[in-house]
Image (cartoon, rainbow, N blue to C red; front, side, top):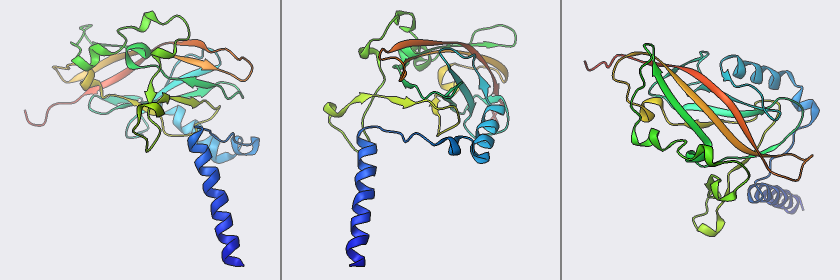
Length: 224
């Protein structure tokens, strides 16, 4: 009897897990979880060491180090992590766009020179200004985990919460986007946009975030 009960519980758990993965569902946390000291501490520490954009549409984007260092300076050889948070107690869904539509990235040296973009860097934001309203053909399409058939493709969607709720996404390392010929400090300007949908509105609308400026450190090449 105990064995049957054990297998029944496992089946229920597996069914719930499968359903969450299939529907891309994210469990909405309780108020107690949101207000817990651990969650508040994690969110505060994350934002203190992050560069944060101005809020638009009740959402802001933050950028942090790949290594999670307590610093607002970014290594030129490390991916730039970024994520989204809600500025209030709402849980909107955002739909990410493909790189040519999602963000514009520029770089400048301390003397005002613009490093030459790489082929990858030049591909970012080429159609950024073409986005004026919702268009599913511009969405970032990602395969479900474990799937390989094109019929299973879906837009990459994430739920935004008023606290840090998971691993951020990443942009390529700055030196994969630009050619930094000399060591030193550079400024990386990133302007992003996403489609957003909230429970209060059945429509999907475009949210643009003002440009955020990151300090990039290009170190001396140890081989030289």
